[in-house]
Length: 338
Ligand SMILES: NC(=O)c1ccc[n+]([C@@H]2O[C@H](COP(=O)([O-])OP(=O)(O)OC[C@H]3O[C@@H](n4cnc5c(N)ncnc54)[C@H](OP(=O)(O)O)[C@@H]3O)[C@@H](O)[C@H]2O)c1
Image 1 (tube, rainbow, N blue to C red):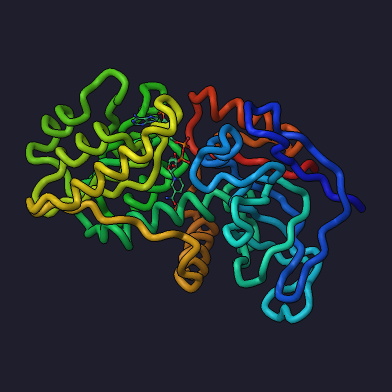
Image 2: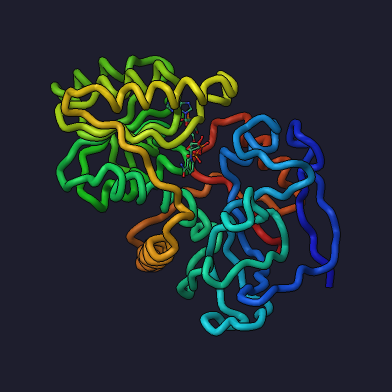
């Protein structure tokens, strides 16, 4: 049997994604080989593919994909926690930029969490990065309390929909910015939608709430955006910035300006805060426990991730085109051919 893997051959548009055939990878000690059923595509993948100047962008050739769900196909030596045939989910952080766009991948057993039976692999893969990012932002960084008011930017995106689902479970009052075509979804997920393209969200939040919100989750970035997000906080409020979606329209210069603005905002002694979120891959015990709990919630029907589209591995370029075009909601997933 041979492996097929999608490789970024040079930086550029979706057409630089090439499917290559190679020998099956062999698991090292402590690793297992996983036959991938679903691999997530993230906004970062487009940034890494598009430019070698994006911070952390690896040298070509490389394979993208930071989250996978699949079946354990072969055990390396010294693995006692997993069995062949078991379905598992996990992140590829330990490999650097990724590696998930492939039929087979070898990962340390310590990075993988068993998936309960009957769970859709495409839904499960949404949990690994998006729901954990949302969980980290909501519970470890913002430390939300039931009844608090939050504004979620990019509310119909992969992380945004996860924040809304977790926010509902946490008993929050929610507002979400999204394009008009996504407002029905944002409402269905329990938030009051705000059209960031045609409305001033600062004014809308003032009109809707009076004194503002307790937390803003901002994956958009940009100095002006962060300043405006900070302004809608009421006393004791927290601005949680965790992404740079604004680079899509404004380019890489957004990144240093966003970092500078967050640092300045954190220095203002006005009772509001702008805490930094921790890296998902840093705390393995938290990562495993939170992913396992999220998978249980999925199996119990407490959460239902929004899958924007499912594409066969060989059509990764078409999936990237969808992300570039926009107009979708939730997470785009590569799935194994039947
Ligand atoms: N720190 C971490 O661990 C971590 C992990 C994952 C992601 N991220 C960051 O989070 C960002 C979002 O990731 P994602 O996977 O959720 O991306 P995504 O699925 O592409 O969602 C982003 C959404 O943001 C919306 N949007 C774009 N510009 C906006 C604006 N000015 N105001 C409000 N909404 C806007 C768009 O929605 P509409 O179609 O409704 O316009 C878009 O679909 C990424 O860029 C990445 O930087 C960080």
